[in-house]
Length: 184
Image 1 (tube, rainbow, N blue to C red):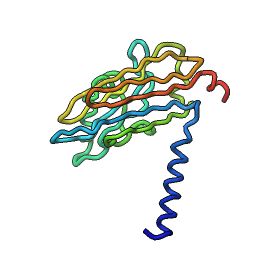
Image 2: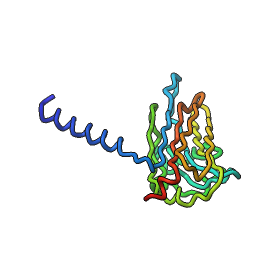
Image 3: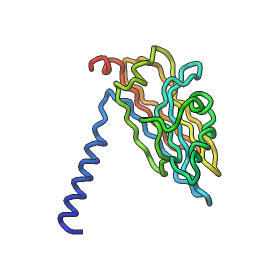
Image 4: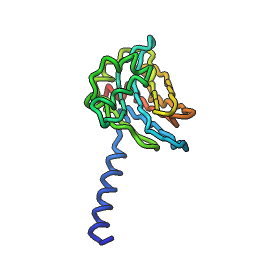
């Protein structure tokens, strides 16, 4: 590797590390782990992440990862109903793709998400009990759903976490304190 290529590489790594570390204490942060499975036919899972209220009504879609392209038109969205809970609560009423929410499936590993505290999905939350829900479904695989309950607003940050058993690994969600949001 030439010196010029090494400098470029270090610059790119430095920029990437700087932007990863920029999550503010007022931001909503999530980490979703997709485990590496030792199976003969592996497909990346479809994943939906949303917030639901006490009545299990979806109040905010945060992310939907699905196969964006397939050989035939619309084939990637064909399997979205396999995310059963998300589909019933919200998915069937959406026209995919949804800007800022939908994206491609992710490989095995930990995936970090940061949501700006000024995002309209959070500013509209009224006081009450909610759950962050993460659902995964994999072709020739299984399904898994994890619910992380929380109360809004809160005077201190809330760190929610749970571990899946098969299709999902460790899930963490950090919700900022309401007082830090009112200071903006």
